Length: 260
Image (cartoon, rainbow, N blue to C red; front, side):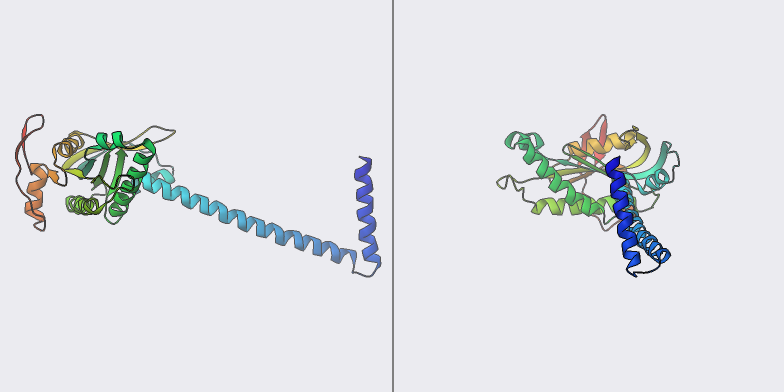
């Protein structure tokens, strides 16, 4: 306490010594001190506001990557998200071929590197179209188009599927250059239900027979090929003649279905 009083007295003596030497009116000096403090305060406020805005922008960008735009906007505004039915959407599922064999021949860190590189490239392709990546779990990569009710959602997923196959045909795995990576793709269209699952780590999920069927289409597809249901094939033939559809024949799913 005694030391603090001595320091305060020394500062006062110094201040009045400067004042006595003709360095200006005491009121003027106090005003200058206040002005300097105000300028520093404004600078700090601007700097912290800028950091806050940058953090908010990063958070919003992340939100729009893990949720469809409409859902992300509602979450940002505090609007409760309810489950919803979507009568007509298109789904695409890409499945990495011989993934188990790849895992057996690489260490886990290399597998993560390969999938990160691969899926980041898929994300870049999807970003050029009106589609949303629902999830990627292990060797499966699923996208949906039509949640925003665009009428040409099937054409969007077909274009994405073709670009993914073209990319993969030229892709070289950095840890296994001796091994050729391939994917097989399934496409289906129809109705789905959507909803947010979880609270601490919410996930946007799709449910329904349309989802189950696209998984089967990908499983039953062939490496480097796009396997579609009869309903999707009919829509393509009627609306999007730019795509070529070849009949594959009867394929056993749960019951027999014609596929293409």
